[in-house]
Image 1 (cartoon, rainbow, N blue to C red):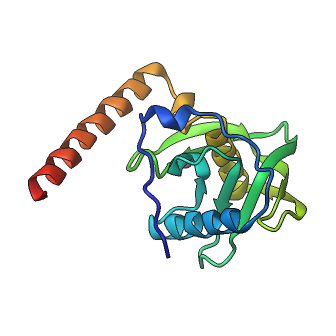
Image 2: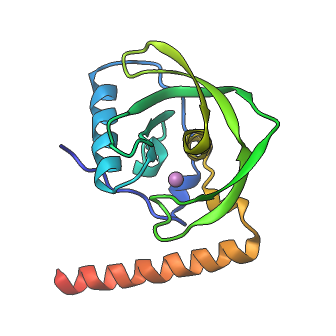
Image 3: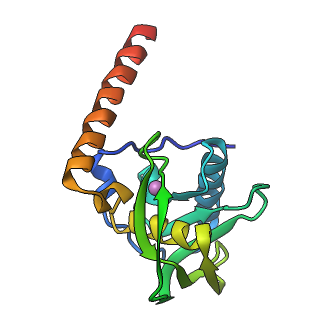
Length: 175
Ligand code: NI
């Protein structure tokens, strides 16, 4: 099991745009396995490769209560989104401790490849629909706080930078 370090907002690397995966090889499978371990360990319901500083279109999601329904999306696309929208209180492993409402389409249909390169489609609503859209945003360099007002975003940025300084101080003290 390998845990990957998760980039923290406002790290500028979170705004890089991910490239499509073209080779479905052992390296991809290992990366997906490491991302999955990292998501479960955090714990979180979704993780995009962008968050572990790998700028390729790869997402892992598990919104089940039992942590037994892993979904791997490689090169995901939204093929349909509902007119109906919902506001969901979102959080993010790259912005720990922050939750705020984001409005998005309530239902989506996504098409992607699994880690073996087999194409599949999934229709989702509720948390899964939110999660797919949230993680796909990461691949476009977008973090959920980008949907909030500049005032809220600046407050969150300041809080995250302050925590970062405290963490660094702690690290240098403990050597
Ligand atoms: Ni996130």
